[in-house]
Image (cartoon, rainbow, N blue to C red; front, side):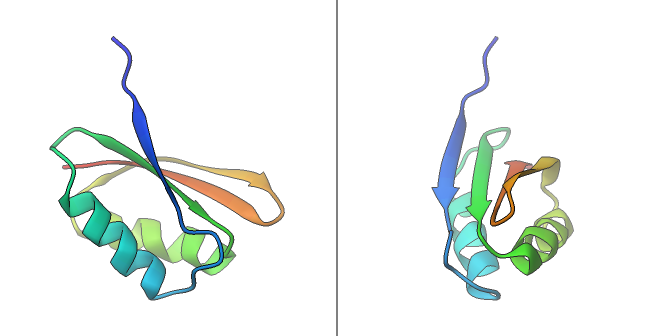
Length: 77
């Protein structure tokens, strides 16, 4: 069974807006749905996963695509 992931592109955004936008988007998802958030900020790529995990969601992985792009894969609780 294939799980599709929705992408949220937050390149160019900075903390704390990156977490606020991620959190608001997560609220619209159903339990078990996956979201991939794309960041261009290394600080967002490290702080947002911690905050999302504190909210009870699961971090499935973090991929660094290139020197300025990170993808954070989240599964909604």
